[in-house]
Length: 118
Image (cartoon, helix red, strand yellow):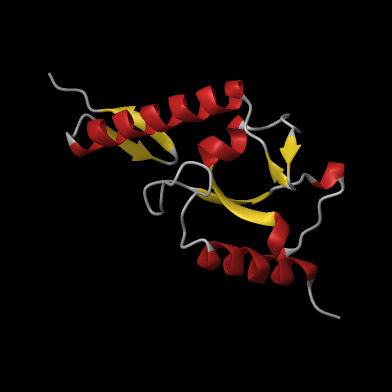
């Protein structure tokens, strides 16, 4: 019997490769963002862990859609609120990247830190 954890990692890797390591909701790509594998139809709503129900999503999009269960044609229909949250997160990510490139902030142990200039 195969290990369920290793099987999940194989499926996850297949989804990330299929989607070219790109968020299917906002288009951001690794390594600029942390990517997750998302269930298009939530497991609690009967969605399965099959490849056709899985999509690559960045952290902002994956977290921004929590609790939204409106679907159209088997895919998540993005509500106006969800779209606004996603757009806001994309703007924040771009501003943060610009600050990082300017040397104003840096990432330490998963937390953004401001560069202090005295």
